[in-house]
Structures are given as structure tokens and as C-alpha cells.
Length: 127
Image 1: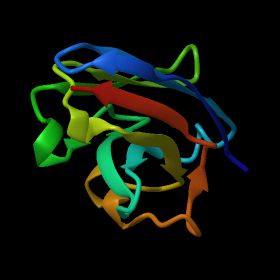
Image 2 (image 1 turned 30 degrees about the vertical axis):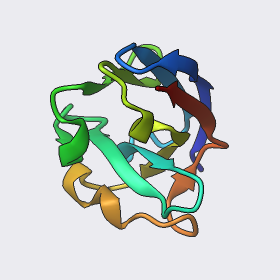
Image 3 (image 1 turned 180 degrees about the vertical axis):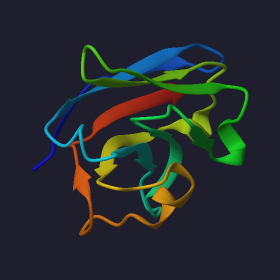
């Protein structure tokens, strides 16, 4: 069983930076793939970035490449998403997600009824 607890987020002006964190409990010995998704009001949930817990290989949605960085700290059982040059379109609830024996490039397939999910944290970017 994998449990995920997000923290961070908040309100920031366009062009600013923000970070979100996800503490992972359980499953780190099961070739976890971790990801951050986001969901804006009235829109479908979409993947933002993903990372392999074991190898550190990453995947990014095109719209965040060069602005967002996903990383993990194995000693702290934590996954981070550093967001720079934020835009109003980045606004949404950000969810941490995990899948055992997963691949970062295939995490976009994860749905709310598959894998493991955190409770979400709000990120609001004002213009």
C-alpha cells in the first residue's frame, strides 16, 4: 500500500515560483513511478511531470518543459515539483500520484481509479 501526502502550493503572481512536495509511504521498493497531475476548474486532470523512483528518469508535459523540475529525495521519501515562470494557465489542484512497477513516460495513463493518489494541493497563479 502506498500513501501520498502533498504539501506546498499557494498563491503566486505570474512569473513567480512555487514548489510542492509529496511524502511517500510504502511501495518505494516496488519500482515506483511518481507523477504530478493537475486539474483546473472545468477541465480534465492532466499529467504535468513524472519520475522513476529507482532511476530518476523523468517525463514532462510539453507546456512545462524548461519551467518545471520534478525530483525525488530517496532519503526523505519525498518527491518535489519546482515550478518557475508560472503562468495563470498553471492554476489548478496539483495531485501527487504513484504506480508500482510503472514508467514515467506511461504515467499519463493513470486515472483517479488506478494507482495511488494524494489529496491534492491548490496552486493559483494570478495575472
